Length: 203
Image 1 (spheres, rainbow, N blue to C red):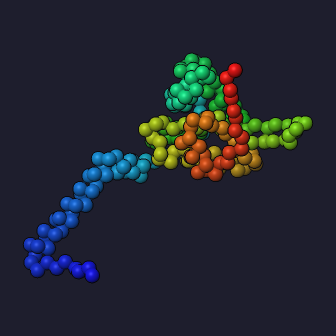
Image 2 (cartoon, helix red, strand yellow):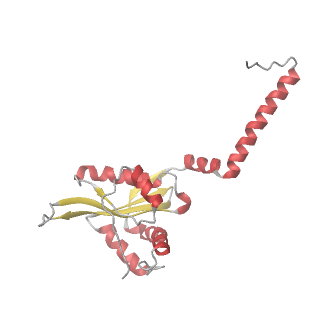
Image 3 (tube, rainbow, N blue to C red):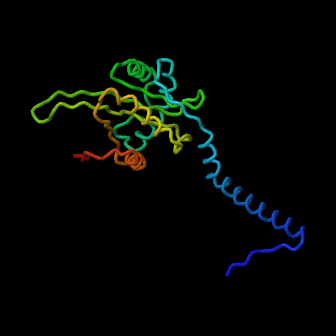
């Protein structure tokens, strides 16, 4: 049977309070030393805003794109370049930002760009084997490595869906390389369902 501690003198009561406070402080210090406490604090203090990208945001998108390219080139070097021609990329981003079918969303903390989502509405006519189909295809979703696991990618998708509701797009579609299992888990957490599996073989 548990018994309550009783302090018969004021000094004993004060010593008990000091010991309790010290114990709590040690726990907090260990959490912050491990990084989890600091990460949680940063997550709580971060205020993210999502905006439609404009031509003045081209440099930010080009910079963030380097993280996408690095992941792809490291894991599928036989397909992806290790670096991208910057002038060509700037021209492409400029065209994408102005394209009527495209949406480019930029995640900002204050004035610092931390991630973007790029996609476009695709309409396919009815063919011999398939029905007419209209969907929004997500080409890129990227968050700066130091800002990941703080809800930025989810915020980008939430904002995208709010834009697409009035357009009656039908559905969101994206694909992901098999090596990117962390991304797969994230997409599944947003209720994306796997539809196809692509295979390849060297001959």
